Image 1 (spheres, rainbow, N blue to C red):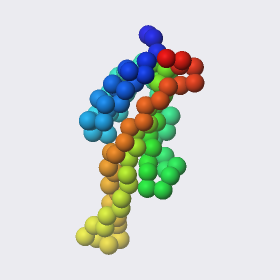
Image 2 (image 1 turned 90 degrees about the horizontal axis):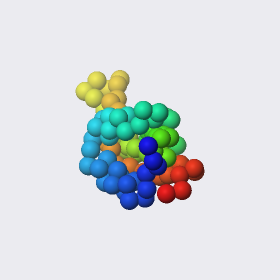
Image 3 (image 1 turned 180 degrees about the vertical axis):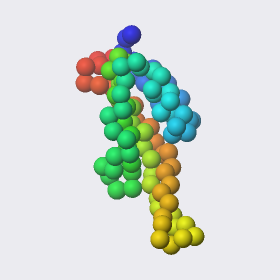
Length: 98
């Protein structure tokens, strides 16, 4: 399979933006048999949690960005984590020249 061109990466970005986080994960898993999850909900920046998929057969890396908030429940001893899917970053791998 050939690497994705810039137009194809933009089309993938627009398609993933309109999905929920779980739907986007499923789509990315089905795109490339050699694809893998590089990291899941990695907090590299304050308030932003990143999940990255590497799709080597397509020459593409996709990062799903979520916003994290803690909410108190009725039981004060416990907080609930909520994640909001806010952004998708699609970029070529270094060997993709398209």
